[in-house]
Length: 495
Image (cartoon, rainbow, N blue to C red; front, side, top):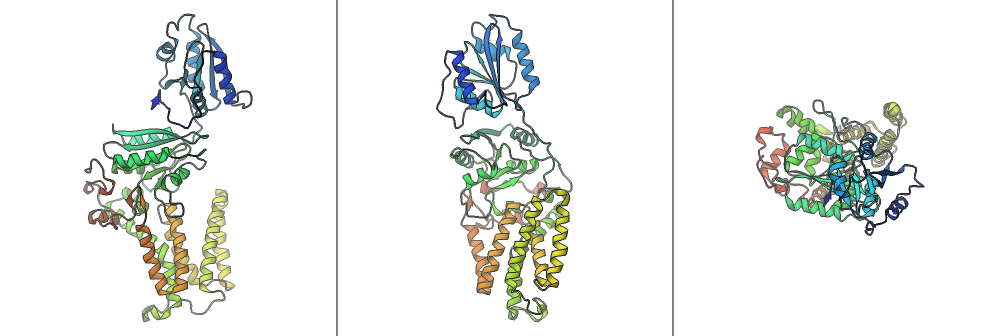
């Protein structure tokens, strides 16, 4: 339910109806907003048209020019101009603004103020009037660092939800595109938007996602979209992402047109795409910004890089310690002499070192982060080989695996693959060939055990769908992609 552009679906305290006493209503609002304590909570005691009025707002959330204009119009009213129905006269005549609403609940009025809109109390009016003239500090829509493309749009989502929905509507001007507002968090009252194309998206998926969001019972969403994901998806000990994040409006638009449901969270520049499969995390906008043949080549290279990031190190370790597995032509694989530190310990130390370097780079100012990486790679790496801590082959294969990790389009998937690589390495070291083969098989079986909103994670590989799998492996020309993914059960399967 929406009143004047402001949703009434929220986690409010017990309803506090507005009373006939103007002073009591003002006193209650001043207490709840901490007017005499918080310097940024503003209260204006005014008198227009012979009636006492009060404005409540948060400094920094209100567009001053709009509020000044409305106050100027109200100041021109004469006594009796609001009679006989002052509420309707204010809403329909004397407050000429688009987003204006009303409520008879003072607690809802408090929540409105804390969310950004201003509210107006008028003597003799049995409702609180909201004026959604809010503005937020916001940066410009710049290209995301994680999803860069050589040729393509350079705008990206920002931390303001209304800007993000506008960037999406700019690309999808469908009359059935829906943006449904929710407010989540008993204290934070975080704005959340569920977006889908009503003529395409499966209503059962839409309903399930909205119900999952409404069931979130917490005091706030401090980590924005990540907190929402953990509440909605569950499986907290599963390292693999069940939703996809994107900061690109064009990527979001593509998934909307396929039948996916998006979740926007105010304060976050990343949008959640639901439901998703494992293969969604391996696609990148760059593939569709090139010719189909080039895009197909890039996708195959990316698949190879992801495979390398998971399986190369355990496989090399297995072949290095089990020389009998190698044919004569590949006997060069493996160290020529035993190192002072066992191979397994070397791999673990370098993996930990890589993660330390990654975290240090994140926490280091951009001006010196490149220098930090060069120092760690050249100085520490070369010295470690010279003193005999590591062998060159270990550093080489770990570097190849690291490149595969960085080539993974989704950051969350790359971190999950890194954990799996370590586990597979340990199993291979403990059990040899059965450990490597069994660990790889268990990984695939593990993928088959979970779903993203009832969508199999490995579809269309398991369960098998030839046409869909072909589109996953090869980047098909857009004119030939005339069907939406069947697993989403779209209302309109034809594109």
